[in-house]
Length: 98
Picture 1 (cartoon, rainbow, N blue to C red):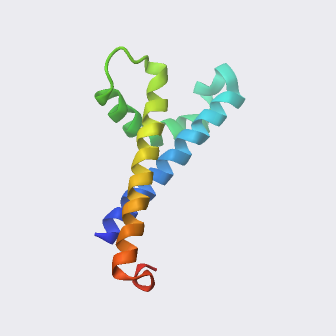
Picture 2: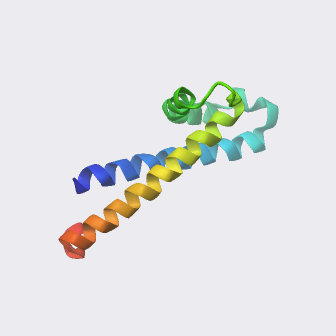
């Protein structure tokens, strides 16, 4: 179970950093961001999470806000996974968690 929680936490961390990198690169590249190779790579990495967020959000949420929803959902997932991992490590012992 510890491996599963750690894996969920790791996937959330990678997706959060990819969303953050995509946002920063979008700010730096401006309107030409869609032709940027690294921006396209970030879109591939974050695509499943953004599509998942689109599925659970109502249609009144604009498409440009869906990545922010995905970021918030991933941040919440990371916080829950971190809290659950801490709780598990306290139960089984900190030495066995390493």
